Length: 227
Ligand code: 5RP
Image (tube, rainbow, N blue to C red):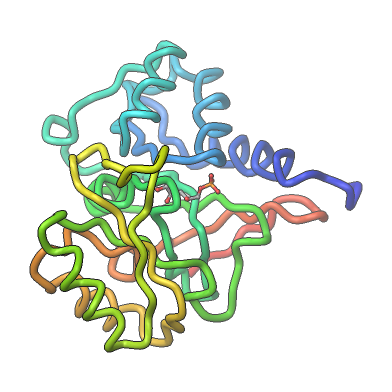
């Protein structure tokens, strides 16, 4: 295979490769982002083989519906066999940073109700230690300043994510902090600690909801990592 594949082509490759994990006759959990968009496009080609999807964002829901894939409420879906989603970083244990697309809370909810998390990513996302990518944290707005101070005490610099000059508002009506300067050596402990701070809705470290499989798009093709 040529080594000149673009990042977009790598995303298409892993999006298509993820079809192998979709269980016929069942629902599939669907994440959010540009890589997942490639998966949704591929999923449309086998939509008659599944009963529908449980979506992690308004954006993915709109794309699924536009392609004729039914979307069910998570509460009506029961446990899912598989959840397919991208990542901003993934390490060699399947721990991830997610939330670059601001959908981390619903992503974690759908991941939690799924048996297997299949991460689809291009090779630029594979890291030795999490933290070069700023950690997204969904927060209740009135707690923002205090949570920023708590991150500063940990050595992190948190900033409020903006969109068109105003605080970005998530699908859940909350705000996002992006925290730079953290090197996350114990992802399970970090996730547990930050998640219990009052006002934190979800921290974008996915350690308790790590991936079991990663389909990594590389110049040599799709590499399957299992954790
Ligand atoms: C959205 C996410 C995405 O999975 C993550 O940001 C990766 O996105 P992309 O596939 O566009 O690189 O967590 O909240």
